[in-house]
Image (cartoon, rainbow, N blue to C red):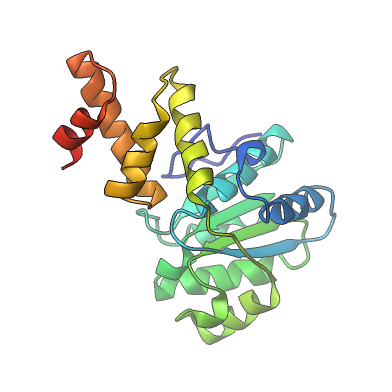
Amino acid sequence: MKQLSLPVSLNAKMRLYNFIGDKNSQILTLIDTLFTDKNYGIVVVSGDKSSGKTHLLQGCVFAAMDRQLNSAYINVQENIPKGLIAQLYETNWICIDNIQDANATQQQELFDLYNQIKHTQTKLVISTLQPPKKLELLKDLKTRLSLAINFTLENLSDEQKNTILENKMMDKNIRIDSKIYAYLFKHYSRDLNILLDAITQLEKASLQQKNNITIPLIKQVLF
């Protein structure tokens, strides 16, 4: 089986086995349990930006695909066709990212989907910046999601973010001096998404100039 044909691509590096965070091991245990549970399961995962929500959801999709299960990943922030969410009720694993940005129509579709899968073995994992009770959602949908399994991801430490950045560069066979990461954290940003984008920019610049990534290059490219 494979991910259904949807207008969102997956990042092959986002796997459950490389999902970082000591406390986050609890959600991994839960996810593993859901794969053997014959009942439906609904999990709402909340967390700040760069806490790993997208990584977790895409990791679930890859894990489902590895088990020959139909799966779907949707990012509400992307251009999602009207009616798509409500049509996923026969999918084994459904992962919907950034539900806090869902419009009224998408929220109604999610509510309908919730009701459709109650008597199936479908697993639904939803991500949001804040727990459902703090979101502006349709009343019935907010009630349903508040009753689901809710889990808040931990905020990653600078050390954990550093590990993610190092792993990204190692995947490309590029090694960067640790002082480069330290400089970025101190002078540029501690937001992981911003740092990942910065590393990509620096990588391109270093290849073009045929030089290593250095502090002077950082100043040239990012400042």
